[in-house]
Amino acid sequence: MKKVVVRGISMPIKHTEAEVFEKASAVLKQQGISPLDMTIYKKSLDARRKSDIHFEYTVMAGIDNAKESFSDSSISFIEDTVPLDMSSLKGENTARKKIVIVGSGPCGLFAAYVLAYCGADVTVLERGGDVDKRRMLIDKFWQGGALDKNTNVQFGEGGAGTFSDGKLNTRIGDPLQRFVLETFVGCGAPKEILYQSKPHIGTDILKICVKNLRQKIEEFGGKVLFETQMTDIKIKNGHIVSAVTDSAEIECDKLILAIGHSSRDTYEMLCRKGVAMEQKPFAAGVRIEHRREFINRAQYGNMADSEVLPTADYRLAYNGEDRSCYSFCMCPGGVVVNASSEDGCLVVNGMSNHSRMADNSNSALVVSVRPSDFDGDSPLAGVEFQRKYEALAYNIADGKGPVQLARDFMKDRISQSFDGVNPSFTGETEFVALKECLPEFITSTLKEGLLDFDKRMKGFLGEGAILTGVEMRTSAPLRIIRDKNFESISCQGLFPAGEGAGYAGGIMSAAIDGIKIAKHILEN
Image 1 (cartoon, rainbow, N blue to C red):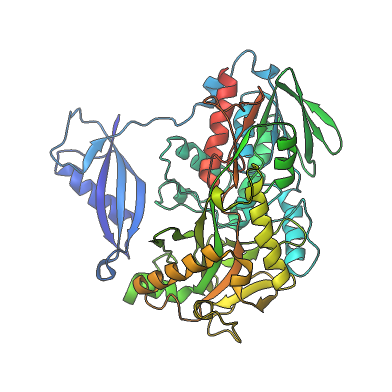
Image 2 (image 1 turned 45 degrees about the vertical axis):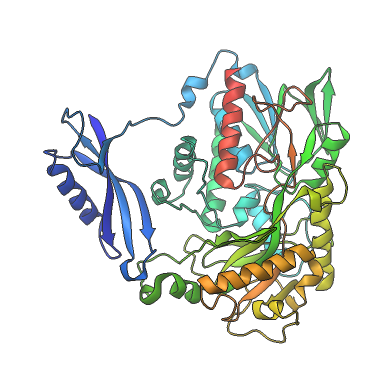
């Protein structure tokens, strides 16, 4: 049975799945085709014109007809391919491959999943706790307790993405995306992520998924060691031979570094060991939050109160003469979280549940940061840049969340009271002048960007919008250099991977990087 897709099925915001299939079937029948079965292949919301908000579908159908082509350009054949056949990667020597993976974020977990399924001897080292202990310690921290430097928003089972929005969209267009989505669905994610144009899981469901994925790894024979930090590596004759933890030394043939973008002490250790790294640009700024209803109105107009439409998101970008400013990691119906991982430093991130129904919507507003902005030529100079401003953010508000109304930020005045938007920050807040904990080039570019965004989304600067600082962990501030085979140019058997190594940006791309490295190891 051949399969075809029918594109461009437009539906009003209120419709049923049966009506979508009925419309797709009518298109096929005009070509003399009676579909045998139909499934939704893609779904997106088109809200470009507020007077005509609708959903766009692509439907996949099976057919028996032996047609070679179609006169309707919206119909085309599609191959029903398997994005990754893990069984084909199993080999006679697979069990002899002794592999250590450092980090249980999406990169480390997906690498471990593929390797363990294929029978390799896999051990995952995770400095933080499992997701249940992690949730307990993070809640205590947000309620005013002490920061645990190993189990926090950045470290622990699932990595930093577990306490985020759980976005799974990416621009890389890799066929392995389907494998990642199917794996998440198999671990408890809603099946809708298989066809949504902007799939997201939400932190509440993602916690369940990463735990289930880890349990699958263990069922396949893989080992996941929590509260086990790698403190050193041993190299012999230019080849990795072991990972040293705070409690043991573990021999290995291969070591995958899926350490995440906040493993600063690990960066420092690798630098001391002579592992090649280089400075890398990233972005930094603040979080802005508005009432969820305001963003809905701005994007949907008169349809903002519709219960059918998802909580609205946005993407904004401004290109100045010297710098760009843009929204990043937008969290509809979410909260701003204290994502700190070092004492005396404060950094924020955004998080939302699957329903995205919290009172506020927030987004990072960030400005490009270049290596030329760092002090010195060390590969770690970007880390020190981040630390400097995170420490300022901590000190300026005495460990509380430093906040300022957007309109007051524009006028360099400290806010006196909130105005219709209450901060969602996970902890206490204090009014400050945010320019005191940001470099001048970020402050000035943010002001230019905010003026531009207010023109495009009327009220963006007003409506009581709150800025919370500082956002510094948008991506790794360095890159651990690897060759075309994913291997460190400094050490054979060492595989820098994912976001922490500078080769991914988000859950999906990090997971795919881990899969590709696992596949390379199995095939070689």
